[in-house]
Image 1 (cartoon, rainbow over the protein chains, first blue to last red):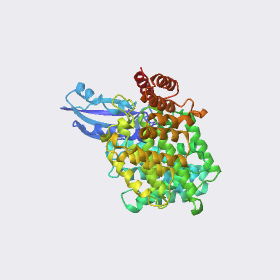
Image 2: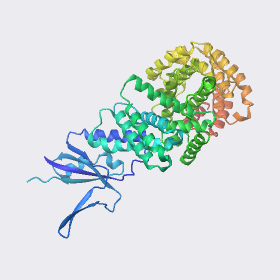
Image 3: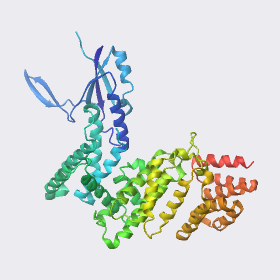
Image 4: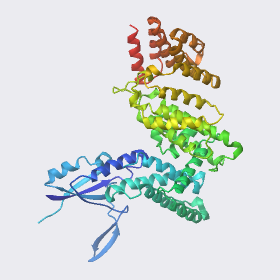
Length: 112
Length: 412
């Protein structure tokens, strides 16, 4: 069994128009998904732009960022188990994040 | 989540709590803070897991967001820090199943209801504002429930909030000398909200059930307060007994099922129990309101084990009583149904003659439907067909239309 990271991107304004009732329904769907047997780990990233450190003239410098072009930001990640990419993708297709306009990047963790 | 409508109900009470600290002109700030807190819950809990006390989490985060907003908002000026300190104190009384805390929060909501239903606001404004601030319905949900467009509802709410500021309405409970009138205004809004949801005009959209259940929730909130009068119990009884029939009102195909054809075993027993509990309390005093009589009618239906054992003579007496309190054509029409069950269709036709002349009801599809039904019973099928045909040309919902079409078919 390999492990895969699901990186969840979303438009920060995405849920704003939902009513409390609709937000609860969305939340319930998300929570239900986290109960899946292949779930390994999950973490939410803080709601800020973060920092990027790059060498500049041989010296590392931190800037605010990454400020990507797209309006979507990386909100958090899940680690799941699957035997290959096909299964990882299949297991992710019904994630409610997609129903609410988010994007999920699937990356396999390296194992030697 | 184990708790039904947790977000909707917590939103209402947190807005009420924040507004009490911030003051009525800042209801919108309170609403924004609550909306943002819920947004954070949706974006955090799926990764970090549910907090042990979800209601308390929302309460605390909304308070923190409100404190930030107060500090950012220049219009608070040098009052900002005092308000922030007060919000910090308020955040400590978070919901955690302690009776005194529950009472405080209920008291906040009650004050909010009385302000939203202030007689200075129109009934439509009160309903929209109550649903938005206490019921935590979105503008879109309110618009759908009232078959209005979102801009109209949004504007209605903005105007109501402006009027609260201009008339300087407060979150104080009304003084003893005006309590009766203010209570009546509240009950009127709640009953209107319930009826809007209960009427079959827009078919079976679930949001309309939510409207009824919210009216019932508000009624139960008022009834639990010390200011509750017997007529509040009567209203709650009436709403609970009628709402109990929801599961039986529509069949699997989405068609309307008449009361007499409903499967009574699918009526909601819990709501019926709530209804009778309050009905018993409503008759404790001398007071007889319209709600009392309506509740008595609903209770008579609920007591019957099947459609054949309904005590129609009693219902007719109750309609006579209701008609003397509220001589409206709609009541007269309902009374005619009781007449037909007690004395037959011919007599019921005589009973509705007076309302047929009311020009406002000439295009009222329910009058035509009832008359068609009565005519068909005594074999005047051609005339009945004419009535169903005419009813079909009135504005009515899709399930009603299908129902009328079936009746028309039966005339042939």
